[in-house]
Image (cartoon, rainbow, N blue to C red; front, top):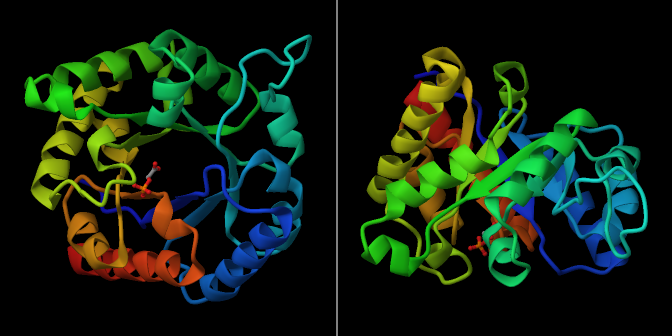
Amino acid sequence: MANKPPFIAGNWKMHMTIAEAKNLATAIVKASADLLEAEIVLAPPFTALSEVKKVLEDGSVQLAAQNLFWEEKGAFTGEVSAPMLKDAGCQYVIIGHSERRQYFGESDAGVNKKVSAALKSGVFPILCIGESLAERDRDETMDILSRQIQGGLEGIAAGDFKSIVVAYEPVWAIGTGKTATPGQAEEVHSHIREKLALSYGIGPAECAIILYGGSVKPANSFALQSEKNIDGFLVGGASLEAESFIQITREAIRAYKEKK
Ligand code: PGA
């Protein structure tokens, strides 16, 4: 298994005024000079994308949006398209986050259209998958994830798959303070990689970046990143303060170096 530099994405969700977003991004950019071994991505709300982009301009920290709509343009009030995200300077876009699936009724078929639309515009998808607590209790975790992977990646060719980051986020761990244990997360990550290998071959599956998300904190990031199949994190709550986000990144880099 290729040991990859940690990929650490901060999902700011529906937080931050433009001024707050600029301050947070500025602090992270400043610290990132000492964190060059990690790929850092920030996902502010739509309203702050262009201003945060200016802060990131000359550094290595990348910009992500939290959602998109699959059509390129048209009468879709309230929606934002992939070409618009590209224009705003986004390299990545989070797709199919469990909060979108849960509160906005997103389905695997819709997620799949969004993945295709992002790829078409040259914006890299961060495809989120994860089971609920009830599904885990019913022992359905692997089936749910297989279904989400299959549905989300339907029709995506191997060449495009290389541009996709997968994020495993157990719904019961998001914002709850209940992190999956490193063992629980690793078990699922290795299943995801096997599943990807069936569709795209062992080589591309090994190269795929698979993130863990759900109550990632400075205190648990080293142990999680130390697992063989965990390549980084999608961080919610702990990404809203520079200090904890930077500390998570530091711990991930330390684990990456020890994994080598
Ligand atoms: P959390 O959120 O770190 O606050 O649990 C993770 C996410 O939803 O991406």
